[in-house]
Length: 87
Image (cartoon, rainbow, N blue to C red; front, side):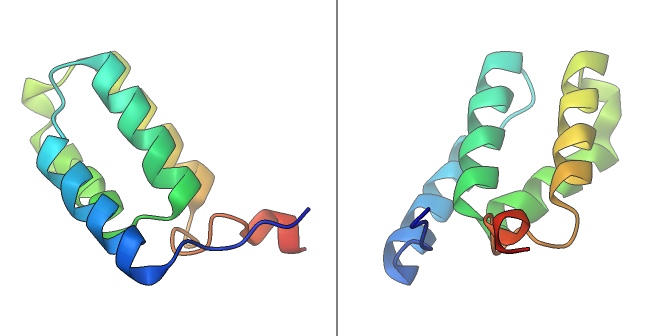
């Protein structure tokens, strides 16, 4: 396996754009963005996603569970999505 982290500039640009697109109105949007964020290790958007749990009144239970599962999966290693492969 030859996985490597994204170039910092590219990673930052993707992170910024996904932060702009984040919303909890659509399960499909949440699912796709979570997948990208977790696989690329996008820290800023990940923290925004975690913060969105503070406003759970306006989010479906399905979306809430999806976000919580993603947070649990990543733990403290969002900046390095290949952490588990390095063990």
